[in-house]
Length: 200
Image (cartoon, rainbow, N blue to C red; front, side, top):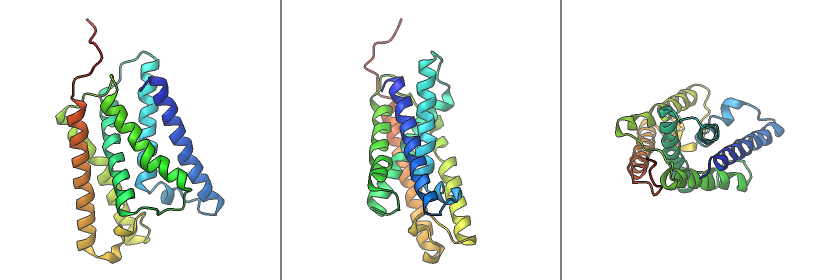
């Protein structure tokens, strides 16, 4: 994907997320901790910012820093989880318009994954950086479980404390396993040789 296209896609996704948040405000649910407590909204926003930063670096003729390259891969891995969990475990849930759900749960994950795997300037992800995929989802799960045990709010029903520790442990373990599987696939496929001729 061209640098300008990455910037445009990132900005459009951010606008879609903000539009969905504006709809929540309009019905009296303006709590940002609830809205951005959803993994979809967080991950889409953060990955969109990564795309804007990557595209901006290229447009400015600046070298992409390594942390941003890894963020590119982490975003792709997390968006795979977003797509699978939403479309398999909790399809059709949420209060956002259907087209917003399609953009965030289908279209954007597909675009980012295709960009990481097919673009000539795709990231070459070092295996020693694979563990970088864990801190953000682990922090998200920790906060959600704490909120569920205190104020009772969780973004997804399968994380309700009332389901019991075995159910929570099974779902959290399954999501983290899916995350590592998707990250391993992204890391593996990103190492394929690029078709773009190397400069001498």
